[in-house]
Image (cartoon, rainbow, N blue to C red; front, side, top):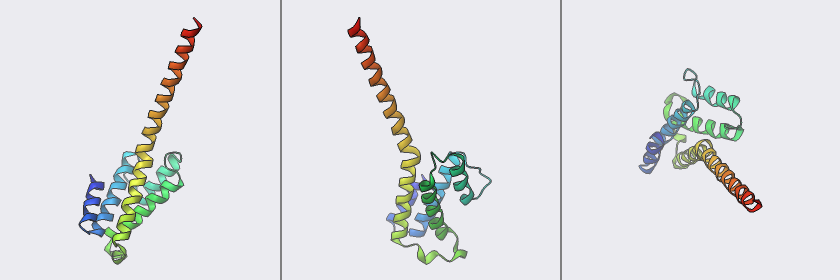
Length: 134
């Protein structure tokens, strides 16, 4: 839902709001993956990388930190990065988040499906060989 809001904000050229919603979407995903709710976003990102470097390798951690940083520019006026949230930054943040979701959610599911399909094919071939032998 937050990701969709980020995209809609981008379409309406609300780039600060777009990166802020990307940040929110990232944090929701981290919490979905058992990050400690008590920690700040920066710590949550590092925490998941430390807990499961296979699911959250260094590249994914770097994507997540980029999303966090760009999102911070959109939500923290005291850091005075607001002028830095332009169309390019918003689009890059959305793309980082899309890739993050692909890596964390889509690819593991596709791998499981492929492994299942390979196992079924192997089993079928083994049954055919056993049938031919009898």
